[in-house]
Length: 132
Image 1 (cartoon, rainbow, N blue to C red):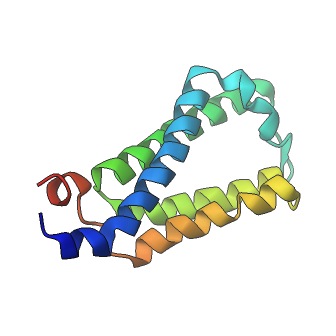
Image 2 (tube, rainbow, N blue to C red; image 1 turned 60 degrees about the vertical axis):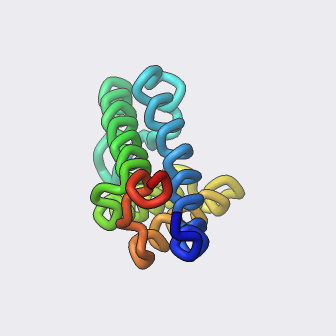
């Protein structure tokens, strides 16, 4: 194994793995039980009222999307696309759902971790470089 390559990109791999764990946990949790997450969906979106059935579907779709982002981070495929989508996704959750409260501000750091992947050399596949 080329130790220079490994040391230069170890931080990116750790960042990808950490973010993948977060997305995978939330994605699978939302897919398996939407009722635990419905309370985080706002009752209104601008002038539109969101009922409980629609909230449940939104949580399910969000869980699938989070799982796709996690799989992208793990596999190394389409990282630049999913890192931008993850940035937008996390920002919207932090600002519109959680608001400017301690947990919302804390979760505002996660989108910038996703954005750092967009600007880094994160497209290299983990399994082809580190395991080789």
